[in-house]
Image (cartoon, rainbow, N blue to C red):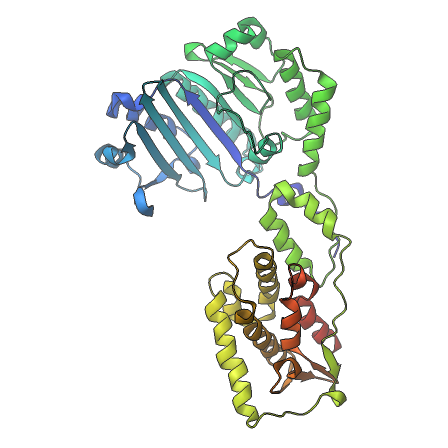
Length: 446
């Protein structure tokens, strides 16, 4: 397998963060402050307007201003107010709104997470959607004094953040430059208002209450391009004269590699498993997965005999043994995995890569482990069932399940033995994948 994904496909797991902070808690003014916030979220692009309200214990109700007023006390806990509003038409996008007032003062935040980042990239709508987000910032700033804000690729932020020390949500100085930046009056005055207003950027605009908006590019779409990285670096070193342009550019260029597709050359027999691994790891680790496994090839399939060498059945009732394999044992697998690997319910070869990857994930400790023997026999039975169902094979049951075979053409395949090898170590589900075993049997059945 060799392919080069389109950048939109390569970057499909990225998220656009949209986060803004204020030193004022609007909910101190009760319904009046609530209405100010709702005015802002209702002013956004129609696709992102709230469609559902999330309550405690996962309860959800259709959004309405009246319901927000009626249920307002349910969002309050001691000095905190938490509101989550799911967007109407963009799956998994939501607003998270928080406000609190205590002895140390007041703070509030409005966050919009747009999943996927591709929403911003839709052809013909990029500038319109970017302008809509900027208008939300203006609407928010007209109602609350903003202390800090940003909008940018979530993955790019992670690449530039120490997971052990992520830093405060409102930094005391400008540490990095995003697609969209808002600096509150305290930060502006510490840098120098004249310097901030002369920042080399696509747009620099004074907002109400003394904040300043700095937009590095017309849209967030090309944040990792050469032009965008140069714009980010120039703006940052302008606000931070202690930094060097060449150093900042080098750092940004290294981050941009994460968003640059590289050829995928996975072995065809395990490519589907590795593509699922890529998707699971996400954009942050995607390049490392491709580089690591582009040169990987599984060992040749060894769990087979010549049909002439396969010993005959030694069980007292052959049909009862086959029924045990294909009914009882396969049913055990479906009961075990119908939620984690729902494709097994189709009993088709297309489920095997998903089954392999689930075994691989579990073996590496990504899921709660189970006893190997709980899975071993059902997996072997399921694999053998597919050899019979899809390739016209014939079971040869044996008391020792490792010797039980399915004869396809001139070869006897040993599905239970393959299942044992498949579950013997952390990387075994890939080295001894069920997918490769089935595909080898299919190739050689003639």
